[in-house]
Length: 611
Image (cartoon, rainbow, N blue to C red):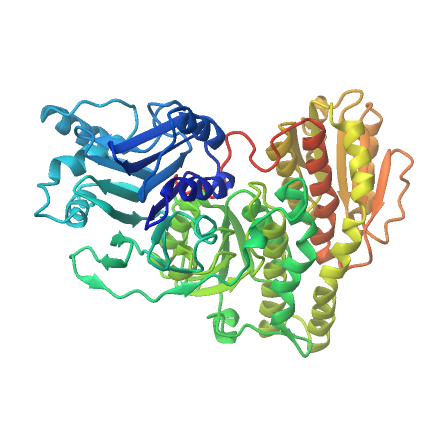
């Protein structure tokens, strides 16, 4: 959520800033703005709505030419989406401008003090407090802006990624961060700041990452990083290892469908390098056999789709390794005062590696003495850097807000973990491990087969796009998969949907079923086929229309179903990787039928970096 971009160099900053903001649209936002040094001084233009509105406003004002500036896409937290609440915010009499991701928790206290010193606030935001605070603390040209920012952040409570500019040096950007991502792009005679690599990759592939509490001075020909004591910190540059084309649509109408179609490769990238000679091998990832063998209790932590992947993982881990395993909502884990012991293992799952609740939960688990293992997609993200061990997904950039390929890659990583854990604990034989590894290795090809249902799902979408409510049913592992399928539909199509454990249907939920209600049922676990078909009959007899996703060996009476799709042959434990694919497609095509903004659903953000 929210996006920051800044540029300083010889070229006109405006088109670079706008391009950077467009590349950050997927993070979610409701307003946008830029601040740049022009011949008229520090010029700020901002607008509610899409970046295109901002661009139109800039052109209407005659355009902007500048060599240094900052830009922002805002996802409203303090104050409604509006022009005056949009970033950047000016401090004092327009000498300082600030963009900010995160939440300043003590902003009201600071605001009250600043008002006593004559500062007048124009917005309802916490960010304007930072702008005025920097202005108040800044004593002029004899003091570097970076030292002022360092003093200011020492007075802030909360989370932030900051970009600050001042009229004292019109070629300089000062950046700072705490609990919100911020990267610095290193160019030739130019440098950038951004909340995401996607905003810099069109100009440079080299970057450094700021750590918590650090402040950077970014000029066209240099970047200097300081720690909280003001000491210079040497940062090792990194290089983006994926092409710009990976963050472009490549001929697809939306990023979501592109990423659905990329799932075989994404899952292959996660699984194939870690299977060798019929065994799961974790090399240089901190997950030693001894560590896994001695794990007493496994806690899986995630939000949204990451949690749903964790629920699937929990089921498989307990079944194969017979270790107690709990899947937690990250935001609840933090406040439940969970029982964590030093020999516990905590698996945290986050596509971005920056999810605020997940990061906080991981830190809590580490403090309690648990070993933490991260399943993340973004290399060098905060969670990846702070975890004791990391399983990278290597799924490539995911731009659509609704995750598809990262979710499937997370499932792949959890499968690997479950098989490895069972192997080192001796709950499966070497022959069984090889069988699972062979099946895992084949998952990407089987996902390709599921993608062939694209036409069928598109047809079903035309038939059911007008339904006001949809229910998903499943038992055990299928229930976890149903929750993810339901979330996909809600996220992108705005159709109300709920996932229920099929056995709970008769305990109240069935009262919601009426003639024409769409029910999507999953039945991929052989021992539960008869139970699930019984639940399907219950809803069908009350007028529901049923889509059934069935396992390869399903032989129950499906005459009560309106549409049946059989999965290819696969161990039932791995079925969630296949059953989700047609349901992702169904959600996508229903959203298209309903003319929804598929890649940028309303009110949602890709990376949730505030609590």
